[in-house]
Each structure stands twice: as structure tokens, then as C-alpha cells.
Image (cartoon, rainbow, N blue to C red):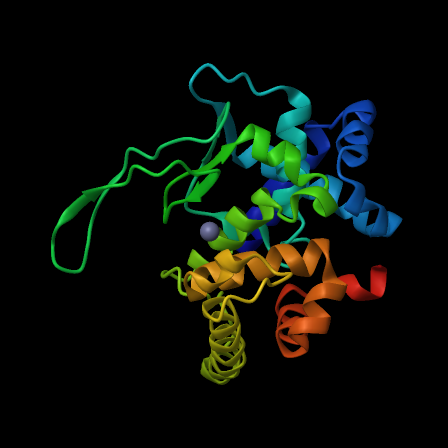
Length: 255
Ligand SMILES: [Zn+2]
């Protein structure tokens, strides 16, 4: 299976080129990519080609997805898996892009069997085995981390990585029980500490939304890891180390 996949990937890379001008415009739209080496950018470009071959990025509510928007979304989705495997994004095909925040029409059943309809507007959503849904203005705003303090695409795709082994529980696929245990200890300690700070009314530099649930803690801290690594390292160095080992990237060494 693995070699078949590699063969397919080589064929896609031979046949589907990404125009130079489009690639340059997409990179220019994402200032944090300036930290990446030429080799990393070249590998990112191949990943983007494979990602766009495997996924459909479609507009909703009249939103038309331009080639540049597609590339910008794919590029950021590929950042977390640069040294991992695109297979982490298997099991779903669509990325749906809305012209603004959207109200998910999904009904869900709670632990007591009551079906709810959510009515709060969202900037993004990642459903298990379902699509990733994004509000384009929020993707666009994310390009400037200093102003937005968020990266919506990395956030939602971190959820996808978390869900690759089933649950959205803040624990991505890890090699064995020992690694899962170590992850659990590190993340629980940091999560509980952060939640106490937020509950205490502290104005945290990391988005307080991370205190919502362990899955959100993983997604928000993944954004910080890639876009503002000095902040994560200063606040939660052990989480930084765990992420460095998991993602096999060391953004602090780049910046
Ligand atoms: Zn989230």
C-alpha cells in the first residue's frame, strides 16, 4: 500500500505543476514562511501539489475560491505535516470555504441522548471523517499573526491530525503506549495550569479559548508553535518539546 501511494504521488508530482507566479504569491501572502529554508519550501511545494490533488476546496454560500485562496489554504494545511505524512489527512475530501463566519447546521447528540442544534457562528470547524470548514475572511486575517493572534487553517488541520486516531482528545497518533502516556502527562499538566490562569481572570498571551477542552488546547498551541514559537517555548517549554518531537520541526531554531 505504501509503495503504491508513493508511486501515485510521484505520478501526481510529474503531471500537476503549480505555476511559479501562483506559488510566489501564496508564499508572499504568508510572512511566517520567510523562516523556512529553501529545502523546506521546496518540500512544502510538493506537498501542496499532492494536497490539492487529493482534496477539493469548494466555496459555499456563493463564495468563489480563487486559485490563490486554494494555494494559501493548502500551504498552511501542509505546514504541520511537512515532516510527517499527508496520510494524516486521509478519510475526508472536502474543504468548504464560506464568505464569512457560518452557523453550522449540524445536529449532535449529547451524552444524555438529547439532540442539539448549534446556533453560534464559527470561523472554522473540523468534523471527524467530515470536511474542514473555513471562513475566508478569517483565513485571510490569519496571515498576519501579530494582528490576528491566530492561524485558522493550522488550527482546524491540527484537529484533523488529533482525530486521525479516532477521538478529538488532544492526543495525536503516537507510536506506542509509552509515548501516549508521556504526552498525556505533559499536556494534562499544562492544560490544567492554563485553565487555572484563565479561570482566575488572567489576560493570557495565548488565546484563552485553549482552555475550552484538551482538543482546543492542542489546536491553539499548535498554531502558536508554528507561528509564534518563542511564546510557546517561554510559557510551556515542555509542550514545546513534545510538539517539536511530534511534528519533527523546530520552529524556534528557524526564528
Ligand atoms: Zn478548535
